[in-house]
Structure formats: C-alpha cells, structure tokens
Length: 375
Ligand SMILES: NC(=O)c1ccc[n+]([C@@H]2O[C@H](COP(=O)([O-])OP(=O)(O)OC[C@H]3O[C@@H](n4cnc5c(N)ncnc54)[C@H](OP(=O)(O)O)[C@@H]3O)[C@@H](O)[C@H]2O)c1
Figure 1 (cartoon, rainbow, N blue to C red):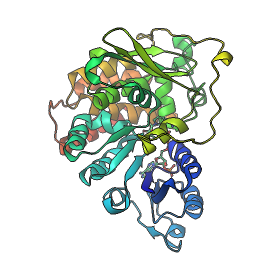
Figure 2: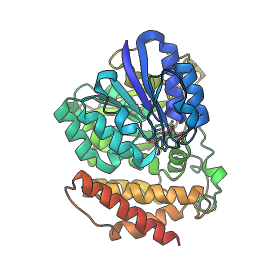
Figure 3: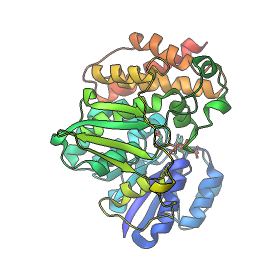
Figure 4: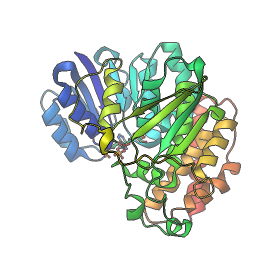
C-alpha cells in the first residue's frame, strides 16, 4: 500500500484523482487532503476518505472538529514535508501556489505527480535540478506530457516532441468574436471540463504555451525540438518523432483519469476507473492543422520567453495569471491578456539565473505591474 497526499483535492484534478483512488482500493492510503476555500467539499471528502491530515486556505472550524484527523490550516508545506507518511504527493492546486509545496516535497525526497504546470513555468530550472539532486521523480499529470512520458524510451534518439492542442472554443471563431468573448464563452471548452484558470488559458492557447515550457523542463528538450499541432478531436494526446522519422503517439478518450492514474501508479498499470473504451471504428476522422500564431500569439510569447530562459517565463506566468483573473472578474476583454503580456514583458526585470527568492520577487513585480495596468 502506497501513501499519497493530494493538495488541491477540491479542484477538477483533485476530485478526479479521488475517483481514481477509490477505484484502486487498497493500493493507496490517503495521508492528507488539502483545498483552498471550498471547505464544504473538503469536509465531505474528509468524511468519505478519512485522511490523517486536512488543510484548507480558508479556516473552517468544522474541519478542526473531525475526530481522528489533524487539521493544518494553510498546511500545504507541512504536508509536503512529511516524508514518513508520503510516498507520493499529487500537486493539483492551480497557479503559483503550487511552487513552494512542490519544492518542500522535493527537499524531503518525496516523489511528485505534477498537475500544476505553473510550478515548472515559474522555476523549472531550479525545480528539475533539485529533483535530480534528491533523486525525486516528477511524474507528469498533464495529458500531453503523460503521453510523451508514455512514448519516450531514449531521449537521445528523439528528433522532436509533438504536443497536440484541441484549439479551444475559439478555434473556428473570428478574431473579432474572440476579442469580444464573454467569460461564459471562454469557459465553454469543447473537450475538457477543467478549472477556470486553465480553461481560460486553453481559450487563449496560453495553456499550450505553458505546456511547451513544461515539456522543455520535464524532458530536457530544446524549444526548437518542441512542436505544437492542433488536433480538435483530442484523441492523440501527444507524440514523439524519433531520429529515424518514426512517430510514436499516445491515444485514448479525452479523460484526465488515465494520466492521473498513470502518474500515481507509475510504472505499473492497473484496471482503472471505468473510462469509455476507445474504438477506432467509431472515430469518423482525426484532423491535424498548424496553429495560427497570429490569432493565438501566446504560443510566440511562450517560445520567446522559454528561449530567453532565466526569469522570463516567471514573468510571463505572473502577467498571464493576473490578467486571467482580471478577465474572470469581468474587468478586461479576453484579448487584453495578450496586450498586457506584450506591453509588460519588456518592463519586467530579467535575471538569467535567478535564485528561488529572486523568482518570488520577480513574480511579485510582474503581478504588481499587471495590476497597475488594469487601473
Ligand atoms: N483540470 C484539468 O483537466 C487539468 C489538466 C492538466 C493540467 N491541469 C493543471 O492542474 C492544476 C489544477 O487545475 P484544476 O483544473 O484542477 O484547477 P481547479 O479546479 O481550479 O482547482 C484548483 C485547486 O487548488 C485549490 N486552491 C486554490 N487556492 C488555494 C490555496 N491558496 N491553498 C490551497 N489550495 C488552493 C482549490 O481549492 P478550492 O477549490 O477549495 O478553493 C482547488 O482544489 C492547474 O495548474 C492546471 O493547469 C489541470
């Protein structure tokens, strides 16, 4: 029996992870569950799964009163320091709050199933270096990176990684329609049901930009060898082209249960939660097309920041995250996210090899610049 904690258990990935764990039965013991402000759901999860520890960002007296459970308000880092009671931690919080707990888990030698891509976008060099030093596995949960992880045998023989993108809700809409999109339209993703931040990122294709940076760090792959291809059916989750021209892709129904399970059970595979079986004969067609870099400039921003390296991707992540929150609050139009990135990236301080403290400083600087531009 392996011991696992989930930080972000009340979110889209966290809830699906609990469904996966329920199906896996006694293969896992849940050490801790942690959420943010949805303490009603966390309470329900605690009663059902009986973890040893609970944490929430919003204090809730009811969580402190559950017998046999230790309540650790704001306890993400404490949970991630508990090596004795964790074989693996699923980091499923969204946004920048994933970075500190992930670093804590690495320092303590605990393997990580990483859903929170912002961690690698903010500080990929530091995170991956520390993980290598500590012998900690960073197992990707993102379906594209899970696909690559499942296809890769020998990194030295890879010609390029091919990351697929569904194209999001505005793939067939005009730039004008996209510019004037409501929050509701941006959240109506055609293929994936996810948290709000990543769904808006998928609408602007910034999610794919963040994934390019994530792939660079996870697989130590130069940006020149990472391609994006739009594949609206989301059946091919990503692929690798080897030096000899052979392509290996991972396919399946679009369900996060599969990559979540693969990350936490790696290298084993089990009969998992009952996802619909994939039928080649039922697939009428699979389309692939090059992304439109003019309509979705976020891909350029990601390649540019990634190639520049250092703190550039930290700033990109911070501006984007603040701009997405402003869009969700109804303060800006969707395409203003692009304008803010373009305008503010040159104003952010750049450090080629930032320390972790500098990363947090530069993250703060970029967020402040973004908030000031909103006024
Ligand atoms: N959803 C997907 O299909 C998917 C696919 C690939 C990658 N990812 C990545 O996985 C991460 C999570 O995505 P998601 O869609 O699951 O997001 P989500 O539904 O918004 O869930 C976010 C989780 O983080 C928790 N949280 C927020 N602020 C917190 C805080 N200050 N302290 C502790 N917990 C906090 C939330 O708690 P409350 O809800 O209780 O506030 C919730 O449990 C993101 O980085 C995303 O890019 C998601």
